[in-house]
Amino acid sequence: MLDEDSEEASHVYRTFDEAIFVIQNGKSVQRFSLDWRSVDDYVTSVRDDIEECDWEDQHYYADYEGPFEPRVRSITMEGAA
Image 1 (cartoon, rainbow, N blue to C red):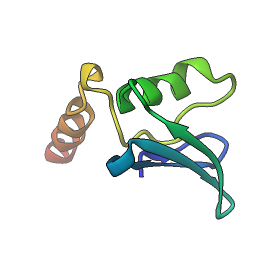
Image 2 (image 1 turned 120 degrees about the vertical axis):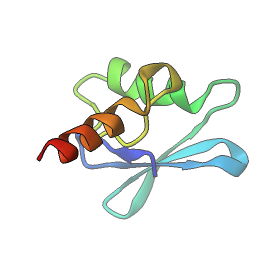
Image 3 (image 1 turned 180 degrees about the vertical axis):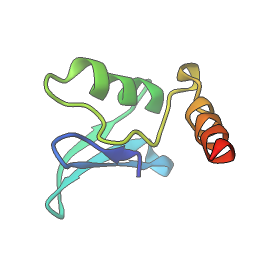
């Protein structure tokens, strides 16, 4: 699972056919075929291009967004406590 968005829909990435499914209330409501795009493009598109929609608690970060930075911050905070 990539993450849940602010509308409580889960986004699931199926790697073997490069498809992303949007699941809401236990039902598949949308299917996106990545085709020539990357999963990074999809993740940033949900955040930046879909009006009034964002990631609730982002678990997946695009390569260029520094995917390890939040984890490093949490380790640093835990060590300081």
